[in-house]
Each structure stands twice: as structure tokens, then as C-alpha cells.
Image 1 (spheres, rainbow, N blue to C red):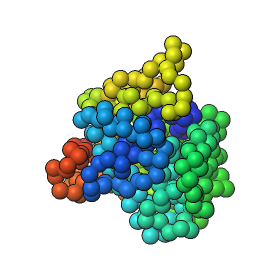
Image 2: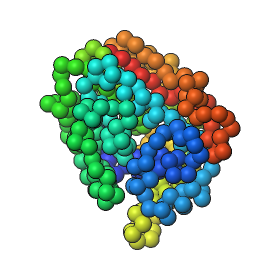
Image 3: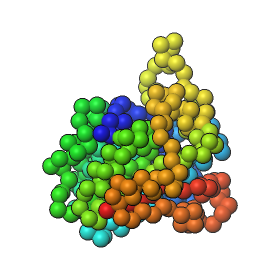
Length: 307
């Protein structure tokens, strides 16, 4: 079950997603779609400037997807807590910072990050090095999905008597369909009112080629590390995100249409499924054109499903 979720430590694509959020906060024009002052702290000023210098329409397109899905997911999570949800679980958290920023959440609500233990250790180390205090209600649950299931990893960690919010962004494209079905089934068995916010990669043949991580930064070594050698090849060029992920050893395994993902969620037992609409997504970007040339995504790729 869910053995593809963060099975590999120190995911390079997770680093690329964090860099997208960092660039948005550090350099994009107001109004920000997502307020994330923590993300830039994961990178050196030189790394941020290098990524800014190689910005392109493809990286801006991916950045729009990344910040929009996080903004909407965080608002959905805050609304679910207002309705009585007792905890938020972030699956395959990578270098996401919601558990530290806690946008819209009361201080007492647990935010539980689930990821590979090695990836979490690296993240916690970077937060400490940046002087970022982790809130008392934040928990890091290290799960190696090659050895245990999500259900086993969360046993005794999440409350069993109240609804739970699960946030799963940038994950299921790395899972086989059987693992996705198991993930959906597990969440659908949670108490009534539980909610899953999940993003997916559209099955458009153009999507993966149009969006792109910052190629020179996606596989970049830390600032103090030695330069690439024959044993450590140089970073990838600025390819599409799907090609970059495959070259980094993290290939996309599953693509979906909005209709297909809704059908899967309903088949798993969710009673209500709603997608982020194009109109609602555009609201977060403010008046167009923006000075930073960011545009709202032309297709929705994140949905919320309620038990």
C-alpha cells in the first residue's frame, strides 16, 4: 500500500517544488498567491539568484500550479478544521512548510507530516539551521513505505473519533494505480467529515512538457558541496517536468483527467468531490496581467473529496 510515497529519501523533485515556492515568495510581484516566508530559507541567496536568472515560461507555469494548489489546499484544510476536523495529515510532505506556517489553523490542531525518515531528517536539519522554530503541535512521522503501510505508520498517531484532513500534493503521479486505490480507500474509511485534498498530473500530452522545474537547480548540490565530477554528473538542462522527474529517477507513473480522478474517488467511497475551478483559481492571482507574468493555470489539477 502506498509504497511509492516518498520511498526514496531526499527527493529532488520535492526540492524543485520548494524552490518554486521560494522564488514566488522572494521575487514574484504582489499579490502573492501563497505566503511562504519559510521556503526561501531552504536555499542560499546564490541558489535563489541562479534559479531566478534561468526563469522561463515553463518554470513560471509550474510555479503557478505549485503555489495555487498549496494555497487552495491550505484553505480547504482550515475550513475543514472549522467544521470539526481534529488533525491535518500531510502525505509525502517533502519540503512543504504548512506544518510550520499553519495558515489559518488554531495553535492546538496537530499537523502531522508523513515522509521517508531520511527526507524528514534533512528537512528538520535545514529548518534548525535557518533558526525556524517548529510549533509544538507539529509532528514528523517517518514512514518507509518499502517496509510498512500508511495505516501502520499512522496507527496511534491520528485521533480515531473525529474527522481528519489529508493533504496529498504532488504525490500520486509517482504511484501505480493500485497504490492510489489503496490510498483513497484508507482515507475513505476515516470518520465521516474527513477530507482528502489531492493534486494530480493531467493526462494531456502537452502538460508535462510545458511545465518545468528550474533545471540547473533541481539536481544542484548544496552550496558547500564539491563541483560535479564524472561520478556526479552536472545538473539536468531545463526539460519538461515529466522528463526531469524521470531523469532524476522519480518517473511519473499515473496521469489522470478531472473526470477520471473524480470517478476513482467516488468509487473509493467519498460522498462529495469538488475540483478547484478555473474561476476560483484565477481569483488568487489578482488583476491580470501581473507584473511577474504569472498566469492562472489553464486547467484544474487539484480536487477535494469528503467522506
